[in-house]
Length: 223
Image (cartoon, rainbow, N blue to C red):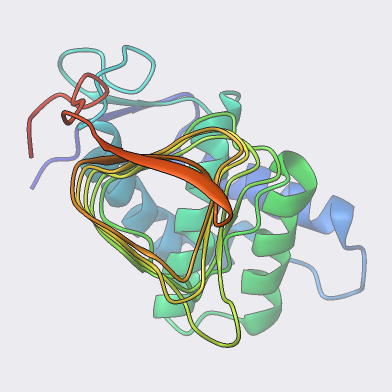
């Protein structure tokens, strides 16, 4: 299958850039080499194509091809997750996976560990301070800045498809968020179920849950 991705750097350039950034940040005598990243980078480009092609935004899809610009912060944050994740799936060097994870934290403030399985299609929107933990994720998650998904007393959430988390929102613990839900800015969901198509505003002590029609404007197809 031909890959339809227009990249700002060729594959070897992307590998060289990531290796140089890792070595600059972690001069610990255990250097990363571009060759160590090639196989994972090839798989990551396929993930970029699959994911970015679904985004209805000219910076991600130009009408013909997926677009990946290493100087687009949201895209590069997603790329570093893909790269570390693919290394993990291929049993790549543990120190290199960890360094790529920490590089993403250093550059973008993103805490998305390579053992976390994000969906095939998702979107990070200027995700400074966003933490995506070991939840179960449905397709087409949108996470803005300072979003958090994580545990409460050892329990993690289940996130449905088409969920949008606005800035500063969090879903924690034994929560089940239905398909097409929207979590409003600065809202907290903890140990709670939300029916599909809900808009949640507030916190456990003071919240409003109301129906909301699904909004597919961010995606190219209804999915």
